Amino acid sequence: MYKKLAIIFLAPLISFTSINTFAKEPKNLDMIKARLIQYHNSGEYEKDQAKVINQAMEYLKTRLARERKSSAHEKFAVVLDIDETSLSNYDDLQAIDFARVPNTSHDAGNKGTNSVIQPTLNLYRYAKENNIAVFFITGRTETSRPATEKNLQQAGFNNWDGLTFKPKNYHEKTAAIYKAQTREQIEKQGYDIVLNIGDQQSDLIGGHADKSFKLPNPYYFIL
Image 1: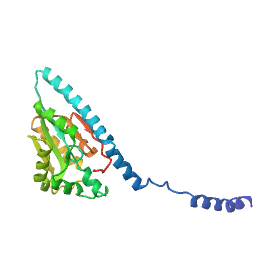
Image 2: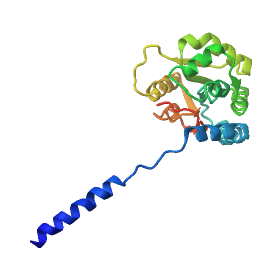
Image 3: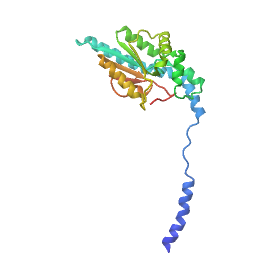
Image 4: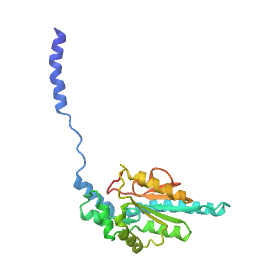
């Protein structure tokens, strides 16, 4: 008799508890966008970019100094991503209220008006002045080549050693595979990739680089 009564009174308690269990509400999207704009306009975004590039520069200088003392001279190379690493799409992203859709960065790239990310250009120039090869590997497609080359040159990137675009028929789930395979091909040319710099983890994972540095990018994510 007592066991039956326990079941009768417990059932409503379980039901009542489940009704009042709510999921945690995510942060408001408009507030997040406002913070993204503030991060850029305050200068903190640029400062954070400079911090990363300065660390990469110090590593490059250390490797170069070590190499000059060595009897075995290596062919050093630096690999750079383009969007949000060498050139900025920020104005285009803000113009569409950060509502990035597939190929948005490619459309921006086709205009050829992206602004330079100055710390990266400084590193690029240092590398070239010290006879270090620089290769660009981008997620842009081959249709963007004319505008991209013009944009890079106008921004101050001159005489690069390679510029690879994502194949038009690329169907892998992540860009990391394509980028790692391209770095591997650079190594097969006899280069030691001292630095690999990008704004996405997919720019960096997969090996084939001595040291990788990730620039901040809270504005979009690419697998």
